[in-house]
Image 1 (cartoon, rainbow, N blue to C red):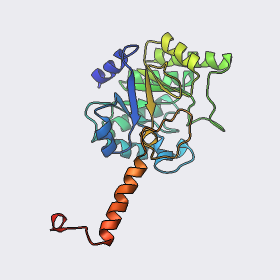
Image 2: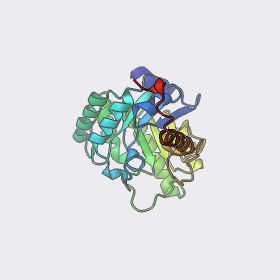
Image 3: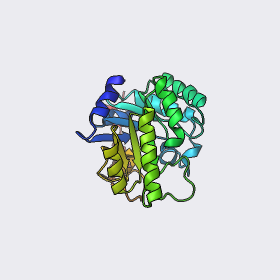
Length: 258
């Protein structure tokens, strides 16, 4: 675990970090050869369960999906999102982090927030639990519509304070979500730990996206989401072929029968 995290930190300003989400073993096995970090994100709430907010995701759900993902991971750094109301104070954060790491054998936890969670991050790191930070848009606490961060000087200064607070607290990296390009560049240059952007421009040390989004499995219409393929067409084609062969009694042949 320590070596994996060290390698992530060493990529700072040298080699772009690739991070993608996984919620099951099958997808995790594919990502493992290509992603530096595999994140079991609480985004599974909307992607898999059709929740309108990540706040409905609980620790049990996160643990069960991470256990599945763990079976497909050998190389990548495996990170689990701590869901809403599981790290409201130092003792709660430590208790739930220990449970998550013990049951899933993951490598680190991710929590949302900057300066307001610095004592919690410090407490976790002090107790040998690696933490990936997350600032900018923080879905667990956002109210109303999601709005990109860093337009005003007040927001820019807050983002810088948050990033520095997380670094000082011992976080090994920070996700910057929907942060304007100029401030994401400034933060990346100011701190000594990697920044991983999602809608935060190429200026970050790495990028993260939801795997289901890049595969075209979701109907996400978000500015930063790029669909690299349309896997729905492939699935539909396979299903139609199966249907046709079943209807015409071409499947199963002797080869596929006992």
